Length: 223
Image (cartoon, rainbow, N blue to C red; front, side, top):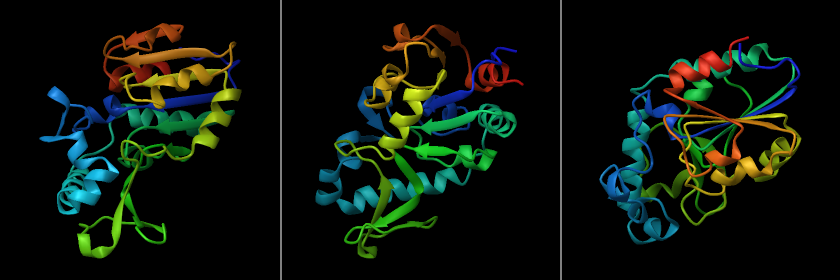
């Protein structure tokens, strides 16, 4: 068992690496391509304004693909830990999928939005959505595009500033502000990074565990 019984406030940050093992493509592919498109073409407010049909089609495909995958052992291990843990547990994810929720996680903050939510372009009203979106719908994906402010930042900051264990799982260490969240933790906080290899922010962590999330996460979070 890796966990210390002295930790009472645990914050976990997950990135694309944890969902990649379930069959979801990461946001940043070879040569800056994202499922065959440059990020600027499908994941910015400017892209939505200039070519809404392409952006809606892109997210329709991602939303449909999400229906074909399932949570993996890492997702289930985090949900089981949250269920058994007696202290305060906060799960921050950069991922827009719902695999954490489907595995049973409850206190999840989606800082980059959610594929299965949309919002009204005029009113900002948010609703659950699983079907395709059209340009005529007046709705946009409830996704934080590049250049937009991530969601739940006040809650995220509050959780980080009081945590005594911070674990980053499957994050690239390249996308800000997520990559800098480790620096928001207290000086006495124990910081652990679980990834296939070191990242640009690895020096900020006390412990680095290299390997698949589906293997390392259940090992670390066993109670």
